[in-house]
Amino acid sequence: MEKMEGQPGFAVEIFKKPLVEAVLKQVALVSGFLWERGWAERNAGNLSVNVTGCFDAKELALFSACPRFDLSPGYPGLSQSVFLVSGTGTRMRDMAADPAGHLCFVCISSQGTSFHLTGFEKDGEPVMPTSELLTHLAVQELLIRQGSTEKAVLHAHVTELIALTQLARFNSEAAINNLLWGMHPETLLFVPGGVGFVPYSLAGTGQIARLTLQSIENHKAVLWEKHGCLAVGNTLHEAFDILDILAKSARIYFLCRSAGTEPEGLTAAQLEEIRNSQLGEPGK
Ligand code: 2HA
Ligand code: ZN
Image (cartoon, rainbow, N blue to C red; front, side, top):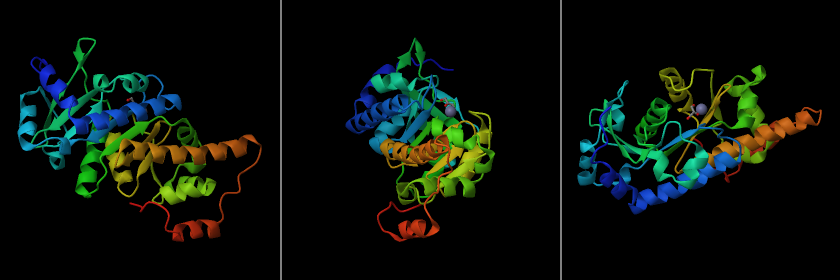
């Protein structure tokens, strides 16, 4: 790893850009929500936001002076894109108090086969990107390929959703979406494309990145079996909202089960009526 010498000045400058500061405010709020909900124990969860639009061509060129790290696989679709990425080992509750101190800028090279890194140091070491960087980059590349306006990717350990994936009967897209949509009208309204289901894979691996990429193509969120979930949004708030709505459905299910009963769920006619209403966000 190359030293971060000479970089703090650049990092200080770009963290102060008004558009970047606006993202930092969102990071602080959303990471605080995750901690308060119990969805981010220890260093659980991570996030990335595409902030390429905050930089002009001259500023983008300055990243090439920052330490460079190889990327495998390459992400040609991310050429010259810049992301704010949560630091590996970072606690969400610490990031809520000091977002800039727990994030780093990742600027992808023109070939997409490496990235330049800048940010502050934490405990004398540079803040390095999350262990789930491969998943974040794969999803961010997909969003660009789809021409999506979505710029935020959020992974969290949403307890209620993890619990659902522990039940084998919900380990399919059809079964889990029927359950989630049936528990509350807003779930179908705001997550009309449903969630994808990613079978258990080791955290931080290329495999979980590949499976997530396949699964999220037609969804705004995916569940990672026995681990957590990941959502995309125009902003971090939007990505959080998706997880929050899904968690509410899961909670209603478990509350009914705790009361000793199987919930009825919305009827097919009720779901159809919601589908035909115009109130929801357009699905993906
Ligand atoms: O960032 O949640 O999946 C820590 C994790 C890994
Ligand atoms: Zn995780």
